[in-house]
Amino acid sequence: MTRKNSNSDKNVDVVLIGAGIMSATLGMLLKELQPDITIDIFERLDVAAAESSDAWNNAGTGHSAFCELNYTPQLTDGSVDTKKAISIAESFEVSKQFWSFLVKSKLVDAPETFIKAIPHMSFVWGDENVDFLKKRYAKLQESDLFKGMVYSEDAAQLADWMPLVMKDRKPTDKVAATRMEIGTDVNFGALTRMMFNKLQTKPDVKLYFHHDVKKLKQKNGLWEVKVKDENTGQKRVVKAKFVFIGAGGGSLPLLEKADIPEGKGFGGFPVSGQWLKCINPEIIEKHNAKVYGKASVGAPPMSVPHLDTRMIDGKKALLFGPYAGFSTRFLKHGSLLDLPLSIKINNIRPMISAGLDNLPLTKYLIDQVRQSPEDRMLALREYLPTAKMEDWELETAGQRVQVIKKDEEHGGILEFGTEVVTAADGSIAALLGASPGASTAVSIMITLMERCFTDQINTPEWQQKLKQMIPSYGEALNGNPQLTENIRTQTSHALGL
Image (tube, one colour):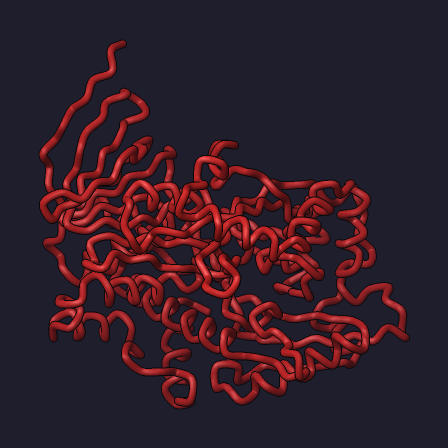
C-alpha cells in the first residue's frame, strides 16, 4: 500500500497531545470556560489513559500528602519541612472541588466509579524513624489541612488500624503510625476515560487514537502539528493557536521537536517499576488502608514502599511496592531508543552533571533490577510479616521520567516532581516529570492557563466560571479553617465519601 501525505489546512484553537489525565483535565476546563473552543486530541495508543494514568501503572493514587513521607523531608537540624506536603494537600482539595463540579453537572458518571474513601497511614519502626514521625505529626498539626490526623505508638491501636501489618510482630518492636481517616483512593484511568467520553460528545472536540505526532513547527503565529495515522499511514497537518504536550514520558521528545528556547537544557531520567499484586482474596479483604513507609537511601520518591488498597475495575485490589528498575524507555509502550535519542547538544551537560551527582540512585536502581523473588518478599515482610510467596505475583507498573534541568551551580540537577514548560508567547506548553502528577492535575492546569490564556482567565466570565467549578479559587485553604471545613463537607457529599 502506498502511504500518502494529506496536508490538511484544518485550523483549531487547541491541540492536546496525549490522552491522559492532564489533557482530559485541561480539555474539560477549557470547554467549560469557553464552550465554542475547538479542540483536537491526538493519542498514539488505541485507548485513553493507557500509560501513567492507568490504575495498574500509577505509582500512587490519591496523593494528598497525608501519608507520603517523602513530601516532608527531615532537614539537617532535625526539623521537618512540611511546605511541599501543605502545597500538595491544598492542590488535592482543588482537584476534589473540580471533580465534585463534574459530578454535579453530570459531566462524569457516578463518583464511586473513580473515587473511594480509604484511610491514609504512615508506618515506621526503629527509634530514629519513630522520632521523625512524631516530629512530622506535630509540625503538620499547625496546618488546617491535616486536622483529624491521629498519631499512635500503641501496638493494640495499630493492630486495630492495620491487623495484617501488626500480626506476628515482636512486642519489643518500636513502631508508630499516623492515620488520616479522610484519605481517598482515586482510579485516574477511569476518571480520565469518563472525561474524554464526555468531551467527545461536545461540539468541535475530536479525539484521534493511533495518531502519532511527528513534527511541531511554529509558522505565522500558528503551530503546525504534523500527525500520522498509524492505521492508514496517512500524514496530515493541523494548525493550532495553542498546543499542550501532555504525553507523560513522551513529552520531552515532543518538546525537543517544538524547539522553543524555554525547552532547551531539559533532559529525562527514566525509572520503571513493578508491583507485587496479592492474588489471595482473604488477604485482600483483611487490609483496608494505604500504608506508606520510608524510602530506602538513594531511592527515587516514586519508590516509597506502600501496602496499598485500591479499587480497580470495581474490585478491591492489594498492591505492594513499587520496586524500582531502569529502562531506557520513556513510556511503558515506548522504544529502547527513547533515552539515547533525547540527548541533544543543549542538554548533554545537565544530563551528565545530574548523573554524576546521583550515583547512589544509579546504584539503587541496579540493585533493584537484580532483586530475586525472595528479595522482594523480604521487603514485603517488613510491612506484612506473615506474607507468603504463593499469595503474590509480579505486575509491571508504568514508566516515570524524572526531570533533569540546567543549574548554574551543578550544571544539571535531577528534579523529583512536575515541571510546566511554556513558551514566552504562551502558545505552547509541556508537562514534564512525575509524582504527584495526577492528584494535582487541576492546580497544574490552572497554573498553565494563567500563563498561556492570560487575557481570557482575567475576564469576569472566566473568573466567575472558575469560582463556580472551584469554590475556593483565588483563596488559600491553609490558614482558613472555616473555608477548609466547608469545602471538605461539600466535596465529601458530592463525591459520596
